[in-house]
Image 1 (cartoon, rainbow, N blue to C red):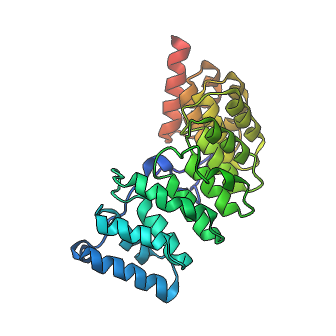
Image 2 (image 1 turned 180 degrees about the vertical axis):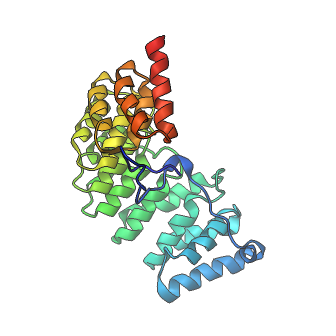
Image 3 (image 1 turned 90 degrees about the horizontal axis):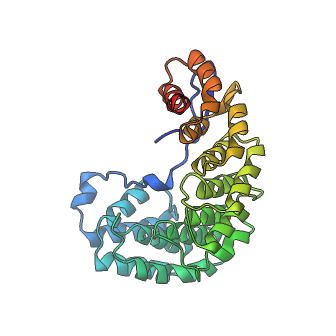
Length: 299
């Protein structure tokens, strides 16, 4: 997965904390013993794990969940719905996690899953709320009537972050308005996901989106600035060019600024990219961005 951190003008810096990108969802391979196990035994192992240590986020638990998600069977659906109705928060979380990607790319039980998730959006446990909201992000556009929207003002940042994830790339007025609101959130990760949601992965273009992206250019966080620059470049907003040149002129700049430069393909970026090409001769993306902008300069 492409790192979304920073580049140094003297060397490529290792990007820390690269986050999962919604458009590149993948199901990790599972051991052969899990693939050969019966569905009933896998479901029982998940129940046992949740009862013993309530760790819904351990590597082994996720291996079990991923294997079950490969099996879009009525028995798995029934178990997931049953877990969502459980009194135990751990099982509710596991039910939401499993149903979210049941069938992997096919999602044959989307309607049933949404119905099972909706009551969880009123749960008092913040882990359940976050799991239910996140699950919506795997199930296509969030319905306008969904309780996901009301959680955008929840006092727990993890819940608001899950809402930003769920709505990312959404095209309805409610989705866009909520993402713009969350792009101004007090929490860094919430702002980051929301900016990503109205920028890189969005196909929408509204004055509100453009203004929200421009606001994020004042961020001290390099990743959020990069997301905003890429979003403005996607929209070909000329107001993003000067800030992009400024970003690329820094000793340490957002990796996504190079993506933005390629997206703009503007001759105005050629001088700053030439300087970068001289200082980073082995960085292919710098060369590609420069070539793209030079083509426009010569056109």
